[in-house]
Length: 112
Length: 115
Image 1 (cartoon, chains in turn yellow, blue):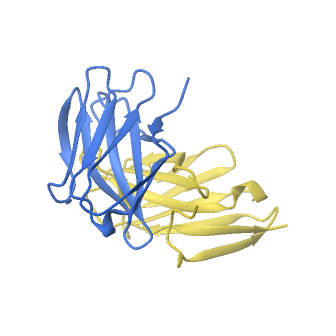
Image 2 (tube, helix red, strand yellow):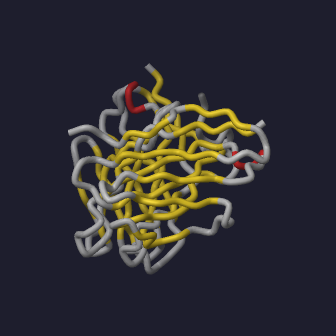
């Protein structure tokens, strides 16, 4: 069953194109940031993380960019595939508290 | 290595009842966090346990409580259920002892419906 908001911002991309999902975080003191992917009926799945002493980190087909000046985080997905269709959440953490603060999410739809 | 497991996956309760949800973390992980996910409020932090102690707490009423056992398994309890408690309850585990926050890995969640 549907487990996330029904009125999320949606990004629709063509299969094979690159996707960029943006997130504005709330606390300038946050020092650890994570991107999660959530498919319908499942729990959030870890994609990539970044600490505040970095501004860019790359994984397999994914890149996270951190701009602390404007409190902005982005997730870039290269060569987007149908399996990438999901809701994507950014999360921030402050002072190693283990309390993640989540953004509201973005729905990514990949058109074949 | 097995992931985070949560039981039961689905629950239906009526107002006023209480419920207990269970979470088994990834082997070796000692930190367990609980989150509530609803369409209106999104993902919200409930609490985090480490070495059988509540280490962090979110802004939920006292009806929401939890505990952690010596094997790091955790339970959360909701008493006097209200309709607004209907949600997906997610558990996440992490090492918890790295000196700074480390990645939290989520289970599939327990879908609670309060009638």
